[in-house]
Image 1 (cartoon, one colour):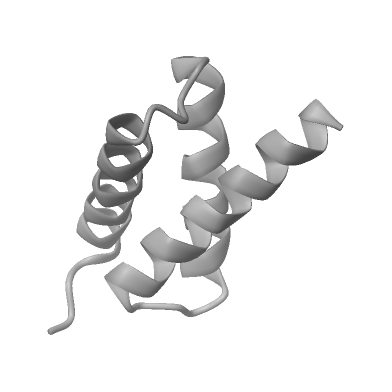
Image 2 (cartoon, rainbow, N blue to C red):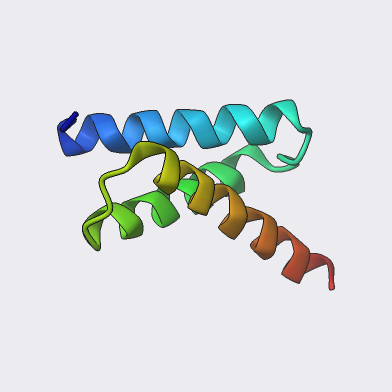
Length: 71
């Protein structure tokens, strides 16, 4: 299914946000939103159109980012 790009970004962001929020990994909502949106936009601009793959990569990137800040 081909979603319009804004819808793809919105749905991918919502999936990633919901997962990270439920797992308690979001400590700064503004920073998390900016990071996830930037990551998702970058993936979509590079041509990725699979919503779950985009969401999962954004989650992984956010976790790596948070881990690097803690180190």
